[in-house]
Length: 267
Image (spheres, rainbow, N blue to C red):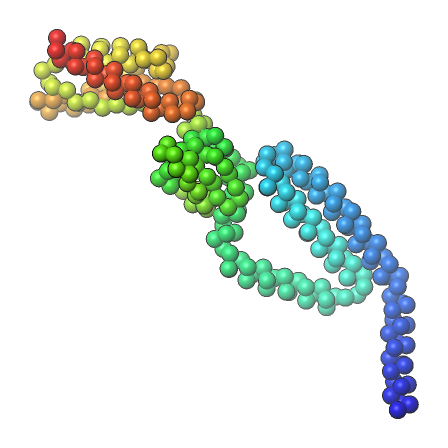
């Protein structure tokens, strides 16, 4: 019994001696980790302000500033453990983090792809809130851009939430980035009509519509002749910044051109 007591006493004495020898390193490790915490908080606030000025998205700036905060804390933890000569603990933590990260990457690969695509969309800004875009077969106004998805309100009044991966990997037509847009209409009329009068009537009709840009002349081209019919195309330009301007102006143009052609055919 006395032998066991001496063995336990020696073991505890060794542990106490080792702990006392480790006290300077422990104090230094605690001080360094506290400094890392203070630096992480300061850099998080600074990084959050910088990202907010760039992205204008609170969710993006908050997310990345918190990621930076956690990274700095992990670095501080590893440095502190290194000072305590806990190399095996650091290796185990890194190995565990790698395995967990790999498993999560496979499990949430679609979520990760949408997240990365959302980050690219927010920072590169191929479109922004309020823009009218055409993507994945949907045309409408962008109402919200999130990390996972983008919400579009179509002209039918439907709210469509598209995964950012689908938008990022496919073609996007952003109508709001173009100052002007051309409207093309096609006509098929009887070959008996006077084509000189038809051309002049259509051109004057296009130039007389209020929303049509008068600084750019309307263009009229005959594209086909079948013996009985003549096919033609008419082009004009409008201000593309006006919401729904294309649909409304095209509506007015078709009505006006139809009236002009009908009047010409009756004369």
